[in-house]
Length: 206
Image (cartoon, rainbow, N blue to C red):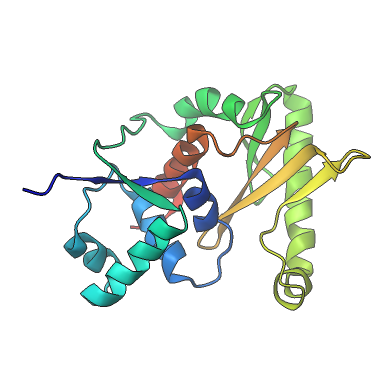
């Protein structure tokens, strides 16, 4: 009897899934996995159902996710945080920055979550992030297509080129969110995967 294995999305997988809104089979599959209320037990049939492709195509796609470290197969299901987004943010956000100063905002500049900042500063920074997203969209063709640069994130850097304040943009279909992170970003923390999953379940259409 083959032991049951469960699909675990890595922080790299969560990041790649929300890096762009350009059509991408790998990104579409990752978003479906993130949208789930529980971790899926792996099977060929599951991947075929999620992708709508033949077994050969779906197996090849999932294997590419494994090879790139975007997902892994683990012996136990991943326990998801069974709380509303609003209740989980105070626990998740501080883990995403070396200084514990983090803001989550939407593409309209509305502050959805804040740790470490005074409320007035958080609202102003959230509004600033919307301006930065708008600026990037105006120059997206140059940056992401002609120059082939990835993502839409920006940073205020010190003389050594290290980020003092990063503006990290994440996309769910046509909806964008931003994390403003002061200090060294810690997006390799499991809190990042939990956050992206919570946003996917809240804002992606079924």
